[in-house]
Length: 109
Length: 273
View (tube, rainbow over the protein chains, first blue to last red):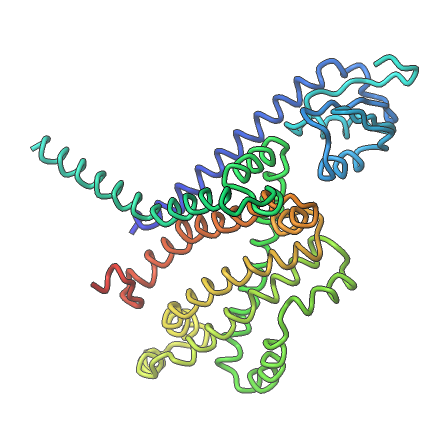
């Protein structure tokens, strides 16, 4: 009887473990990406440059638009303003985001 | 002794491997014919992509995080819609099958609604609930509802009277009758209903996401064709097929085997011979 239920149970466990691994690795990457940005924890209207591994598509832009105001896009870089620290943390968890930098609007990033 | 066990195990692995490859022959043939046809037809890749283009589109979607996100969205909507529809149908199916008043009150309405496909409802749902999760879940609930309802009703109504009378003689009350006679007796039809609902809901998901969503595999298929990214459309279609095969192979079939097939209530091609 138990043998008959092993297949669905085993598959569920494998799927759950794979999801957990994926979640944990993206969280870990997110922590690494946020390392240089801990100085701005208390600020709420940050301006950041989000660097992707590729030019952003509609899918990525719709996510970025939810996190702040998109100012411009240059190649793989998206310039966002009015970003909160928690939104930045959320952004850092996306594996397709390579890095996040503070954007100093005088032109230096 | 050990060598005999090893050879038996090796033989069963060989048999499993042979069976597995036999199942893949059709897919390989399709891929070969498809690849050969591409230079013969000689059309632009956005019009008729080769399997290799589809593979590249698959890798591209994976590396950009689009496929994960869309698959997750679609799976959540599918499970939610299927669960709601099937639960409602099971409840109402039992009520209608056992209660004449409920049957008289609801059957004409259900028969009327059954004829109206979900595609006709989706524009109305969009108007009422807006784009997104609610509209899709309501549409999927509607799709999942009818096959499950009719199968549950039929299963309960065909319960052999001898079981009902025997249980009543032993002093079973109405709840005990439902739990211990009607539902176990109707289980083969209920599982058939679940399988049909699961399949219909899968198809409904594509329609719903094409019209009422900005994410999901259905949206990927639709967006790919409107943006002339045909390879992405095909990736979406393959994902749907694979997701259904996964669901059927690892959940629906084992559940059937563990219940109705094991109890001898349903004959499969394997155990009939």
